[in-house]
Image (tube, rainbow, N blue to C red; front, side, top):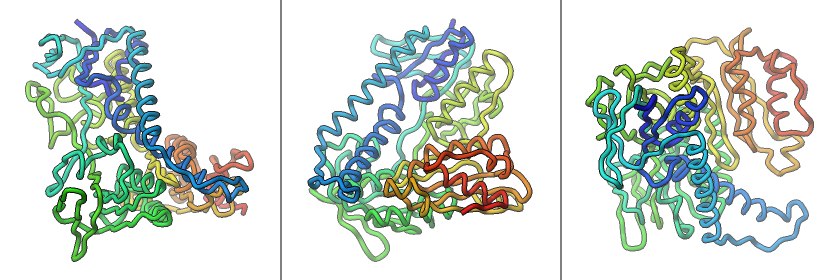
Length: 457
């Protein structure tokens, strides 16, 4: 009998398996795919960011003349970029498999299904086997959603899964859904020269994000050529032999391919949760967020399938650590969801942490709002990326509640604000620390100085 049997080797599952080594726990990790790493490593975060960085390199070369570097017009060899993506993913999955082996984790290939508490039946290449564990962690992840009228065919209508393996760049693309995934593909494709139409039924892109940050990102995406339409619903796709027509209002656009990016659904069907007392609502599993335990003692759930928590790889990591900590010690180390950073890897990037302005007001806080642009930040001007803004939300005469950044390397800079939010720092306390000059992070420092009541520039 294992101490822990984990179903799913994505970020949450493999993080839990690796972390269990710290406590000497025996672990079996069940994975239905050929490779470990889940969506993030194989069909999500890592390959997507490869393509986004490829677009960034392309844009940098295209603008090289601005810096006095004379070049010819860049051309992208898509097959080379695709091969590099596959090489990166392959190297990381092999490295992860090796690390799991070195930690003594038994990786079991096949589809895992709960058979009551503490039992997991695995249907794999070598038939069915029964694994028993003192505890079980369910980490089966998620898959892309679709919408009526947009049946995924892998060619004309695709999800991010298929788009990451396109063998050539589509000339004209419609993207349905302007969340993080939709915006990232829009940014990447526009920078590489595609005609991009981005549709969102809500009144802003990246729904749920700070409204000012979303507006700033939309403004920058439009500068890059993305045609954005919000507060709009599309009609059923009209699929032809070589194109797709997307109707909306009294208009339509004709494109080569439609990317459906309307979110992800939890993969909990058929995994045996109904053989336990775990509560499942619309596919999402309810847990005690202090411990990640379900209503079935000894059965835990983490990652994208958990009800009410962000579907982010780093949240899966943290939930895996929280579950293992409780299993091993009996003491809880819950995730501080309030201080979880969100990054949209567009050009420029958008990142946020803590409460947005709207959320803080909704919760009844009396707040101060402080902003500072990148316009006059020396390092931003040097690299030719001085558009964007830092915004800090703080309680009047109280701590920092949240922050958003739209600008170059926002995803790196947001972690400074993550600590400020997580440690409930006062603006004056955070502003007391010195930022190196010239750096992009000076934009954060300037915002903190202003928030503390003593602005500089």
